Amino acid sequence: MKIITVLSKLWSRINSRPLVHDSITTTIWSTIGKAVGFLIPFFIASWFGVTAETDAFFFVYGIILFLSGIFYSVVEKIMVPFIVEVKSNGEDVGRFIGSVLTVVTVILFILCGLIILTAKPILSIVTKFDTESLNLVFIILLEIAPLIIFLTWTSTLAGAIRAYKRFVIPAVSPAFRAIISLLIIFIFRNFWGIHAVAIGYVIGELFRFLILFIFIYKKRLFKINLCFNIDKTKGFLKVSSYQVLGMLAVGLSPIIDKMMASWLETGSVSILEYANRLYMIPVTFLSTGLMVVLLSYWSERYYKLGKQKLKEDVKKALKVVSLIAIVITFVLIIFNRIIVSVAFGRGEFNMEKLPEVGWVFVFYLVGFAPYMAGQIFVQSHLVLKNTKALLKCGLYITLLNILLNYIFMKFFKVAGIALATSFTSIFSLCYLGIVFYKKLGKEG
Image (cartoon, rainbow, N blue to C red; front, top):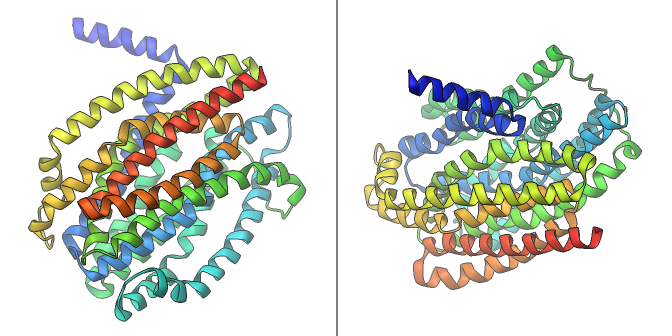
């Protein structure tokens, strides 16, 4: 009975603090939403193993995530402070969102066309895939290219919904996407082979978009009014452009990692991807729910209470997130062999590759705490609409990542690529922190 009483009091205290309540509940729902999606690479490992075909798919998937991430993550994050401002000014939110969707979609169609036209000649120069693998890469690219547009659509709606402090549906919606994707891969894997994975991802994301659209319609949050209005989105596009370029720079790092991994022995690209997927589990758990809530609340507080409140919020968040991240890092490093064995030790996966995946995973974990602390400063710069700082940081990270990859690969092979990523996370934390406090000082 005492335990129940204590828990009841604790929950009452949490409910009395909306930021804490939304952070915890959104983290829980985000974990559920992302958990199913994180199962997909493990099923791929079990069903397809480590082969030239999986190398081709993961290489293409990395390109698609890079290209779509430039837009969908930017739109989803930048959307929140802009919608908060639009609402504060009493303007039509649905018209603003409709204009963003239309303009961005046109841009993405042009981008996809350019990628398809130039992919094959460029990849033949920068990678060391044989002719058969390169042809497979191009075919998979054609199949999965629509994912760029669908991811941006869903992220636009998700960002808009979060601006209204509705966090549950955007958080849990990736689970529906993953379930549909897994069903398609499972049903058609023997007929389409690795192509079933590409098609499954595309159909799953389209299904997620429909869920978010129906939610907005049912809750009557706003009525989307599609229109090609550059003037309406001029401010949004200007601020977003810096973040897009920054994401372009940052997003190049995973592509460069896979490209340089292709210089090593066959299977290195897949090993890097499998270890990275393990690493992204704690990253997603700690960031997906918390960061979107912080961005929404901090944006509102900044417009009402000013820079000093933002400074206090950032300081508190850094302490909490850093402590949790450090504890998670030590736990995962201690149990890394068990985790890798449970995740991949079955089916078509080559058991001799397990130790190598484990080392790559550990080297990724070295940068986990700095990366999470750095994400706090990313949100603070987004609140300030200081996307120029994120652009500069992205450029520096890309150059540093290439240099460190080249050095560490000589000593640790594919694990050296993961270690280079960790070092860039430390650099990013230091740079964004210094710039944030300098900017607040100048505004004072």
